[in-house]
Length: 532
Image 1 (tube, rainbow, N blue to C red):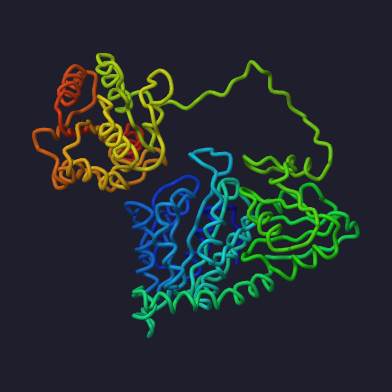
Image 2 (cartoon, one colour):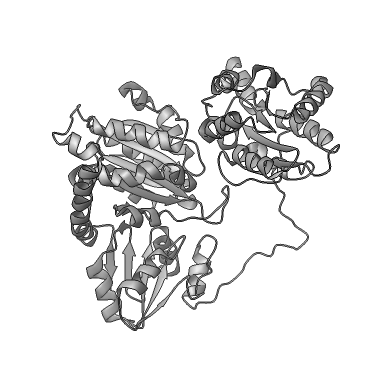
């Protein structure tokens, strides 16, 4: 056992390695990216041959992880909160099949939307699938929960949904590590065909098994060392603090709690402790990072007249992250401000790197689109989304991964001309290929620009599944070769790029243009590494 300084993400990764991990399957997404990167960089993981290559998207990652679990191995699958939407089909059905080798699914939620398009709280997915959810309050708990979570998963024969948020993922603390375990041996369960072949006859039986497990999940929460009841003399208000919110509560009571506190870091909700808190206190304050998940359940299941305060009644604002000051305000304490930020200071928005190939693409596209009355550009999730900001203001939409192509198709079908989709290479292989097939099948009159920088740039330059393959993928899907065009986005090719965009807009069918130039950041890293 030794103590190390870890990010929350790093603590999770090290715990998984120490617990006997055999593989991690993920798609990059802030704030979960560093978990997989840590395992990729780990000498121990390399020595053990732990699988750690990036997957094409979160659905393929979770399904591949299930295959490893089916074989009896311990596996980790990591994604940001919106990634679980992509993997939801697999996730909901894994709740029906259960697992063999221990499986932990990381959902890294992003309250305040630091780098996301929504604030969803994926504890709701845990309730939806009726699966156990772990939510650590600090980095040490994150390590311990992962380390012990594999035993828990194998004992229950179900996956664990492990929820962290941005502050937990990206803040550091000292963590005591534990003895490293050996990996599991190959072991196929004897009832594999009944459990993993979800034909209706089997699925109905498996659903009854899942329902019968609920009391066991609740009992495990009631007995969990991560769910603690702290008694205190002032019974006017009882406080429920979930996950990292417990940390913020502690900061406001450095000398000990004045009110009874129920710390919840493992779900389903521990009914015995909840009942005790409600019986002993006049009212309840719920502190939780994200949606009012516990608050809603509490109001829906108690059936009593006790007041419950939290996000639903405005005691805590409905949007944004929690922090110690917001908790202090909810407790009715005065918040002192020590720093004044002058109004003249404004936030500086991010910008595309100087020399980025996306810049050349947007400049050429904007120039050509000035020639048309009402063009619309549908974009996607990636660093090229910054084309929405000045000086380009080049895109009209950004909704979810892959939606650029499908939205542009729908707009074209509605009569918008020209309809242009801009998507990156990694996003294209993540979830753009199926939309392209729809366009090919109807030869939709639109232009798709796959701006290929040969990396997953937005999350730090991870490998892109499409590097060197975009042209062949498009050709294989059925794009007409004469309207599948490539160019290097450089100033010397500016006029040629404009002419190419103009020609393909005027073509009344489907066109795909692939401007391809390596990301300047990953190129710089390669040059620097070569000099060492």
